[in-house]
Length: 312
Image (tube, rainbow, N blue to C red; front, side, top):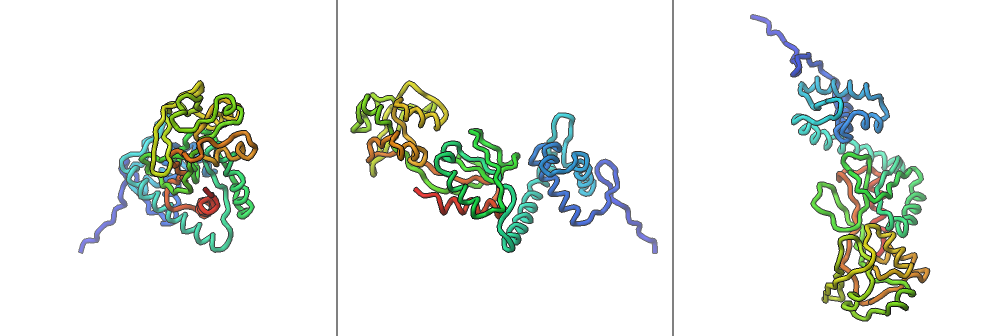
């Protein structure tokens, strides 16, 4: 009987494929996911704390093990191949599951630890969330914080953020949104402005007042019970920063429509006063956004803490 010869399979470039250990393959899958998310070797190597050359060699070895090209590399950019896109989606779920399992088991032995990277809304954080973050930090001394309060919308897929807190409706998005609280905007003005311009008694009177608006907004919809009224509003200032809108209101520049949590300090100091207290704007959700439902313990605890401690 003829002996059947076993041939070593070749990759698409003709290189013989050498069997790899399962644990090495899983580790290389995690590296591939990091490269795909960072959209490049250099950024991924920096976040992983390993040499760029080592990372490139590991990914090349993974491609040879699979027998398919996963990445198109040029001197200027890197793109996933069709096989790479399929492999990335599968690998990402596997790595997330493995990371979640380790986090949950670790959380059974000790308090959550590590660096929590969060993107937060500037004014809501400065005026309201800061004491809660300090309280959370005291509860979990093993967690360090890397907080981004810039107005830009971070990319949770390609940037190393664990969670983003956002105010307002979330458009169609693949991200996971968890509602923390729903804010109700009210009308506010400074005593100096009301003394100069008069106290509005009905929503229709807002048309003759200076109203401080976010750019692109030219009408306010107010509610009282089941009644709803939309009023055209205008003013000398239109801008895209809530903090400056609030500050201008304290300087007697006009009326504002903002949640109480955003103006709480100005209310307590007497710089602002509630106007038309029976009326309010449409409710605004505050949400925690994450890339996946499989969260590390530090992120799970942070979101759960905010859900419990944020009050209307």
